[in-house]
Image (cartoon, rainbow, N blue to C red; front, top):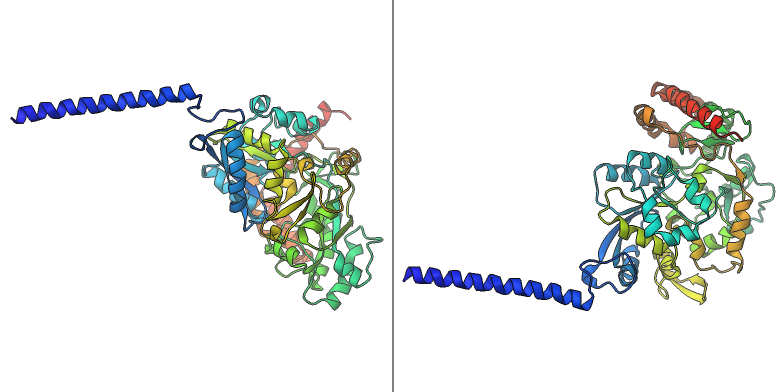
Length: 502
């Protein structure tokens, strides 16, 4: 009897297995008959919800309250278009480089990330293997990017002959400006005439300090750097080359008279209360800017940037130049998106970045949020912010092709034509095209970074007396191996110059 029960149970098991096998075959066959893909393809169009791939995107900027809400809408659009959804993680300005170094070193899963010459250094991290080489992806899934970008962007951002990131289509030169809260400028009948140097702003700062105790006269963060006539071989590290002398000599910027003069001025401003006591530890100015409790700061500009800033903050902002218009390596690489070397979906990541840089609907959703929630359209290619824009205020330059973004109030119809004029007016830096290979000095650079963390922000923001702390910093940088790094950089620059006579 027991043997009969066992036989009957075995028969049931066989029949059940056969039934499941038939069901599986039927399901696969049905998918083929209906044309449904086993997983989302590389082309656009109607990928079902079950076939979507979630892409993790790390980017720079003050974390916004509504970022998840906006990404939900973005994901609906991208799921339909290319079969992907987007999870965005924002990291504040001052924390971005350090946190991304930790994340990539520890193997944190991610697909795409912001990189630049000045934040999570593009060249150095490409050489370290943090980014996916995208030469082939650009030919296949990134054709729209290649078609829309000025060839100078992709050529100028190659590392050792290969592309590892997608530059944002934006301005090529770097032009620094002094920005003013126009409400306060007008209140005290102050003028921007004659304003250019760091020293020239003091009479205006003095007026605000004496009359507006709740206002920060000169708003800066821990990343502030004075404008100097030098090109940094690695962003915000002491190795520099003069823009004016034409000698291609690598020097320690901390030993230059121009920097000492700027640090003296900054320290005097700090002592007079023009600068916040927390400047050396301040990551961002988002709250200060939204509240309007500032008078002056400094920023990189673009054509009609005043309109963008005024629209973003909700009150008028005006600016005047604080530097020459120069094309540096770091300005060509000033805003890039890279695909992680560890991404499980590099093709889909490139599809998304291609769509981001070619599709106005997606680009403006990422930039400005949800229509009729964060902004409203005033024409086919124009918009204005709504009250909820304060919950989703993104750095436009960091998110891809800026020429797809809607015009702001006050922008002329020829805004993007003016970008071409702006780009053509830039003066080429003597070191444009030279990328320092740090492979042989990685140990020294790690030590130099540690010294920078000890001194740099405190010195540059004027928080400490340069007469006391600058000699200490110079001594510690040299002890960390700065002279060896400078010698290596000089040898490479000499070889590059011999191979690229101008």
